[in-house]
Image (cartoon, rainbow, N blue to C red; front, side):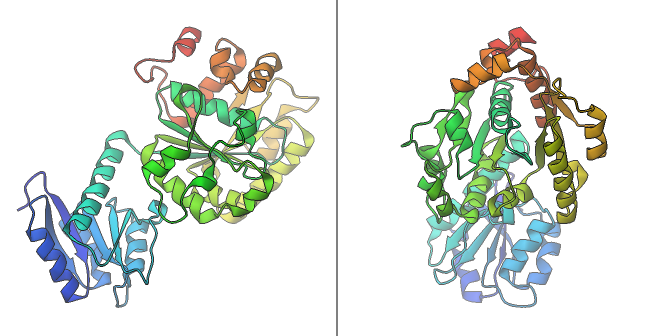
Length: 390
């Protein structure tokens, strides 16, 4: 029997020499116990249920009816909740992608230190994630420009942080860098293009994040329009996979329109927060987007609607919007241009600059409900400004 603090390892390997080599490395230490070696991919799911391993190592080159990467996909689809290390060779490169069930990669040849560092690393990360609960990816989207999307994304991120969530913001409007502009970030501030394109570590990420107000970390878009074409969807997906390990909440401010990157972000999102206003064009576009989301296959529960400037109907009956959406919008934020405008022009969050304002209180309430934060939550107590205003 494994000691209570031993890591239980399941090895999926059909090459006897490799299996024997791994067994020999593990026999030389006591931290990890090999519970089984499975040579047939079709048997893996059953053995996982039987042995309940803490970590699974899968050879990407596994042959048979269910090949190596098919086993990885099956484990991910079954949501077994066990981190997977993929074993491969340089001629068959595999990238870490937590969103596809690849928590770590180990390339042959390797030694005992390489093997142990991968196993203990993913086990530690999984344990930390279990302790703090699952992270949440929320993508802020709008079917039309000018509805306050970026300002809201920024302030919701700050509100989440002061309520106690470790929060990161991603500037997904990669052509014009809306968050970069709002924050008045200098042109030489690091951007997502400064991340490595193969494997991204925590150190790599820390080096390029822009620290915003209230400890919100921000991954900025490139500083120039023409640089947007250098941003690859697969690199952003890998970055988000890492950020979901490190943060309680990842917020993405998207551009307007459905390009390849925006679609990929929407696919990955746990929740899409769609910003709408009482505007005829916005309502028309919102209806079109609802039809598109339905065709894509998004469940209605994935999309939440926020009416910005909800007390400025501009002659439109609010019931028209309810009819267009087919339901009551989940959230509403009142208009307060004399608060939002000056704060935005200074690159400051209005939720902390003017915490007693209606727009700040509305935004705080949206953050509590959308991100599932209790009203009394906070990192060592609520932010003084918001605490005083509540």
